[in-house]
Image (cartoon, rainbow, N blue to C red; front, side, top):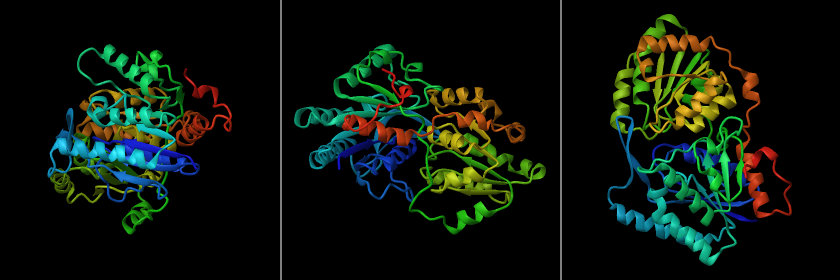
Length: 412
C-alpha cells in the first residue's frame, strides 16, 4: 500500500485540522496515512483510527478579545523557548519523513498560507525530499479562499509563492467549487503556476465514526423545541457575536418558542468562557457548552444556525441546508468573500458589525427563519471534495490505473 504523509498546522482555530481529517477518512481506504499535526490538541476530536499521528510541540498565534494579534507564532507550552520548540519540531518532521518514506507529501495550506511562519521546518523537509527521495510527489491542499497577508508588495509576494510552488510541488488541490470561487479570484498570479491545479469541490465534514453521542447531546437533540444553534468554531474569535446572542436571549424568549444551543469552542480561554457562563446564567431558553464532536447533528436538527463564516462551518451549512446567519469575523476578508458569494445565491444571510445589538439581531433571526432554504441551488454545489481528493491522488501516484478527472477539476 502506498504511503501519504500529511502535514497540518492550526494556528488560530480548528478549521485546517477538520478539513484534513475529512480528507484522510477518504485516503485511508487506499493509502497508508501518517499525519504530522502541529496545532493545539482538542479533547474528543476524532481522528481516523487507521491514521498514524505525530504530534509536534504546538504552535499558536496571539488573540486578544476575539481578535487575532499579528501573525507571529508562539509555543503553546511556555516551558520551552520558541527556538527550542522550532528545533524539536524540525527534527521530528525530518525523522518522521526518513522513517515513513512516503510516496506523497501533502502540506495543508503551505506555501500559500503560514508561509514565513513555517518555512524554518518546511523548507528543510522539501529539500530532504529532493535530495533523498525525489520520486515522492509533493501536493498542496488548499481551501477555497486564501489571502496573502505579508506586508509590502502583495503582487511580488504572490509571485514568490507561485515560484516556490513551481520549485517544490507537483500539484495543487483547491477545495472549492469552481462555479463559486476560483484560485485566480484572489491570487492574481495564479497563471504563473506550472504544476497542475485541480478543483476537488468543497470538503464537507461527516459525523464521527467512533465517538458515541453522550447523554447531554442525546437529550439536546431529542428536545422537541425548535433549535437555534450558535457556534464560533474553535473559540478564539467571535466573542462579540456570542455576547450579543446571549443578551438577545430574553427578547427571543418572550417572542419565539425555541431553545438556544451555544457552543463557545474548545480553544476558548477559561477566563473568557467563565465570563460567558456568568452572562448566560438564569436564562432558561439557553444552553452554553464549549464543544461537542457532534455539531453536525445539531446543525441537521436546527431551525437556524448562527455562526462565524469559517470554511468548515460554511460547508456544514451547505450540506445540511439549514437556514443560516453568518458573521464574517476575520480581518483579511476570507470569510466575508465566501459569505458574500453564497448570500447572492440565497444560501445564507450575512450579519454585519452594526447588527450586533440584541434588538437588531432579534429582527435578523425572525427574518432568517422566514426565508426559503434554496435547496435546489444547494443541490447543484460540488460537495464531494474529500472523495475527489482521494481519486486525484490515486491518479497522481498511479496514472496508469486511474481514469481522467472530471474536466471541471482541472484548471491548468
